Length: 332
Image 1 (cartoon, rainbow, N blue to C red):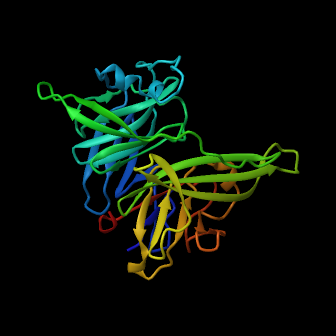
Image 2: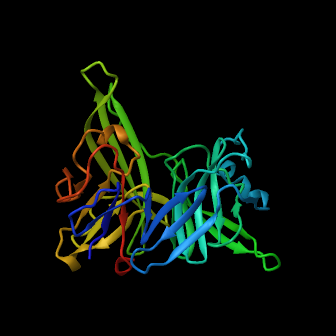
Image 3: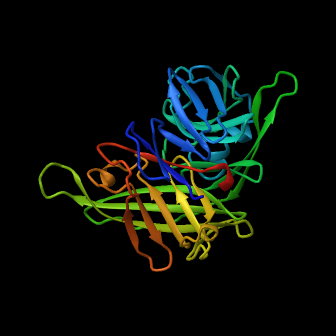
């Protein structure tokens, strides 16, 4: 079974592999719902539901200064901002580590940081590790640790611990796995370039996929942007050289399904599908590119370098309908 795509709409879909649901994002096999300041995670396959603490219930983690100041150690300037514990806490990314642990990239005032919680518990535990205010950071679970891609494209490994006395969650250690001096990318001359980065684990390797959306000012004097194209670059984390290394092929048996909310590598040869390609969804993060299109997602071939705009048969695409990948347990 290949991944489902889930759409933010109440209209049903006729495609057997596309579900229409009122969920803003997907997280692996979980659909994520927000109601009255509380996130609920629902698994449509096992029927299990996990309820997370209210976003207003926050507890600051007491951490060593070397964790708090890690971004400065990596060459960044000391952040002038600080966490605003009284601000609303929008969630940028959710990672379900297990039924007992959920991690999130959250926005508290002017900066992003990491928050941890136990489903069913009373509060979130918020780290003082500042990731700056940059929405194009990412996080996933790898080798039993959280790995975070920061704004400079450094790759950080985070160990989560628990206080034996009070049960509070904490970040016990942060290690820099990849330190990036610079990664160059092309911009559209006299146009618009929107760049996103996501992490994917593929058969034991950590991949970083850079997606660049290109556009030009529209000719109708409305101030809108006319989509021109999408460019994909794939990098693999080389833990020996501590650098990102360019990748030109994924292998004929593998395909990457990517979005800002969740990404995964799938062995598509088991389903007699074409591999060595990347599928990307209209997940609402680049509205100007997808606005007005009937397409719901695109496929990039690593074999011929071409990108194709696709739409599942019978899928819904009317008005604003961001989507998320939904992976059955058999693909996890």
